[in-house]
Image (cartoon, rainbow, N blue to C red; front, side, top):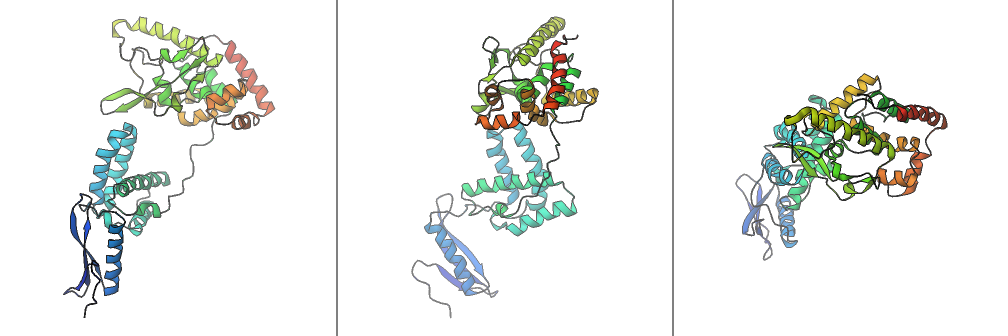
Length: 385
């Protein structure tokens, strides 16, 4: 005989297949009252599930109005949440992880029935069967976490099961930044290159690739020895575009050391020659104020700059590092350039001067003397070509 439920407690009945079915009216995400069913192999199991459903209702958490699969939600999330609000490169990176890994393995599963075990098994498959690198697996799980977290915020899920799965351990493989000696040797080797000043800004001021390529002459104040990066070069569906930097801190007024100002003055002279040589082929507005441009005035493709940087390293015969890693040489190089610690603090965007001094005090005296001699040669070397 079925146990009697209290008023408002829903109903529990025994099905022909032997299972117990609980039912109660709850509110869905569309604001409608709907009858929701739960199932259990015993009466008590069904009663427990029904109780949780009603607790959710009493706490004001609606049930999903539709049964999303993981694949359907990921497609919606990419198109309507990520794409309108994030940089194109971020969208493209997320989309590739969804298309190549998440949808093939988890796409058909109902999102509300996804469990930590499903996600953990999926991650194990990527590691052992498909031999996917740890860094890629890390990114895949992060994308899934972000997508499910948004579903939870929109009350389509009550929890994010991907957060219950440990992130893969990733060994940083970028290597060590250059020493000041290596950085100065590189700058000396690329002294005559048309993008020498861009290399200076990356190494000495720690600017990001997109920030360097987005710098305009109007952003530079030579008289006050300062500059304000406000734009960046990015790629979207339409091609290369100039976009605002993401945060106000990224648009801070930064000091411009004389070494960098001199490199920019040389760049301005060289660009004038390139403009004159290009004649009518020079590309005009809206990009005519860019400091670093192609030989005919167009924006430089960020990946193209990275390839050029890599080729210059190879030509110089130095240990290969990425543009991103080259930025981390900045603090050490500022110490060798004898830039005042307070100025270096602003350039490095350190919140406390002690952080800057920690970089400065780790400069070895012997290295300082060797690099200082190399730097003197570099500063005295006239621009070639």
